[in-house]
Length: 141
Image 1 (cartoon, helix red, strand yellow):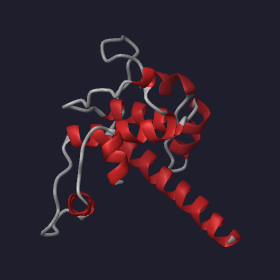
Image 2 (tube, one colour):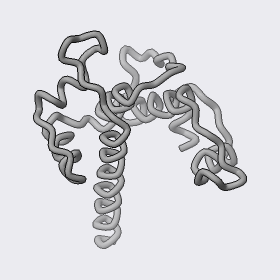
Image 3 (cartoon, one colour):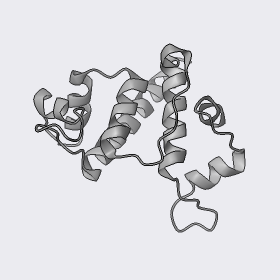
Image 4 (cartoon, helix red, strand yellow):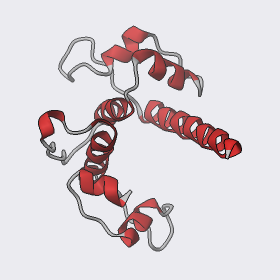
């Protein structure tokens, strides 16, 4: 994770990462700001896809759920069908049209906001999917 943050343009220590990952209510817990998350997500994109035009993007100071969704989609190279399937994993049924509305600009008449519940559902589905893949790889060793 330290390397991902660095790819996103933010130097962090192991202790800082542990504090970010600590559960709310724990003494060492540090709240993750939008800008810190933007650095991480930009680094995640760079790790998996490289920088667009070899230029490190500026980390946003404010993120919306739609922006986070877009960055995850780019980093993991997820297609519309992949996202629809991931949302269905936790019972959120979206059409491809509803999904594409979440990637429109906020001023567009067909823009759809990605709710906290939807983003949380996607993150949960990704966690479960990648944990299953890790377990399957571990069985092969």
